Image (cartoon, rainbow, N blue to C red; front, side):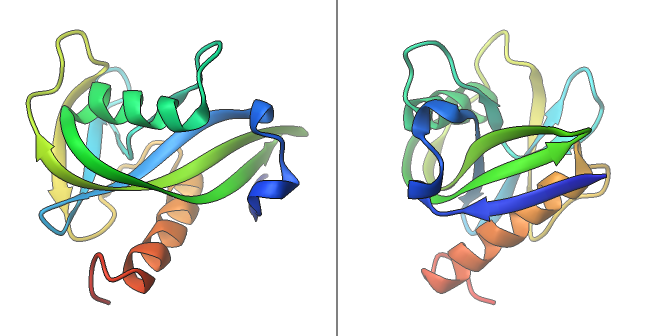
Length: 147
């Protein structure tokens, strides 16, 4: 069983945040990446590198997986995923992409799609759905999109 829980920023030390996931919009459409090895769609995301802040992880991954070069990035929530008695922590961000170029050479993503909602065939479907719902609330409450 998988469990996703949202936390306040003060509940989890930043050094324990290992994944950044970025719910993103471009021209009022949600951005999803098609992973080359999985054949599924996902929000841009990735693991934190040594000596990198979680915000810099989000910025780097957003560029590497979508080609976004100009965007506003907002923290949404710290979250945890419990699976098989193991807990991993990450941070969910929201990005309003202004300029998107080609996905950089060597990216693990084949292409991106722009969508009004979640696509079918999601990577980590339960986790991505919960994170997307939280990001959707954020986007609506901050007037990035309408309900």
